[in-house]
Image (cartoon, helix red, strand yellow):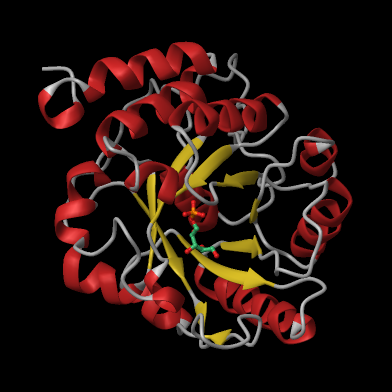
Length: 297
Ligand code: R5P
C-alpha cells in the first residue's frame, strides 16, 4: 500500500500563472495533441521549417532515374531530411524501423504514366498508416483536371479518416500538362485543399505572386521541387519560396539526381533552416561535393 502524502508544504506556486502551450505552425493551434505531435515530427520546432525528401515517384512512373536502388540511393541521405515522402511498399521493404525522423506517406494512386493521371483513388487505409506510425499522409489533388471532383473527394475522405486517428493530410496540388502554373491557379488549388481540411499543402513555386499563394493559404505550404535544375537554380528557387512564406520544401529529383545528393541536401537545409543566401548555400554544396561521401569529415 503506498503511504499517504501528508506533507503540509506543497509546491503549487500560485504566484506563477499557468501559460497554455502554444504551437509553432500556421493554422495548427486547434488540432488535437496527437496531430500536432506528428506535425512536430515533420517540421523542426526550432526553425518551424522542414526539408522533406520526396522519392515516391515510383508509384506512377516506376524506377525513376536516381531511384533505381532506394537502399543505395536514398538511405545514405535519409537522416539528413526532416521527413521522407514515400510509399508504404518502400517503407516496409527498405526503410529501417529505427528511422527517427518524419514519415509522409503517399496515400493515392492508380493510374501509371501510361494513363490519365488524375484518375486516382485512395490507395492506403488510414489504419495501415497508423500501424506504420506515419506522421502525415499525402494525396494528389487535380484542380481543373479531368477527375477533379474524384481527387478532391479522395482528399476529403482521407482528412475525415485522418482526424479519427490524429494523422494530418498533405494535399498535393498536381498541375496537368493542360493547366497554367501561375499564382492565380495555385492560389485556387492550395486554398481549396486548405478550406476542405488539408493540414498541409504542397505546391510549386512561381516567379510572379508566390507570396500571394502562401498568404492566402491558412495552413503551411511546402514547395514542390519539380524537374532537375542546376544546383544553384534549385537553391535559388528554394530560397525565394522560403523568403515568400513557404514553411519548407519537399524536393526529390533536385536532390537525388544531383551529382552529390549528400552535399545538395546539406545546402538545401542551410537555405531552409538557416536562411542562407543561394550563393552561400551553393558554395557549401561545391565544397562538400568535393569531399569523399559529400560530407565534412
Ligand atoms: C508528385 O506528384 C509526387 O509527389 C512526386 O512523386 C514527387 O513528390 C515529386 O518530387 P520532385 O518533383 O521534387 O522530384
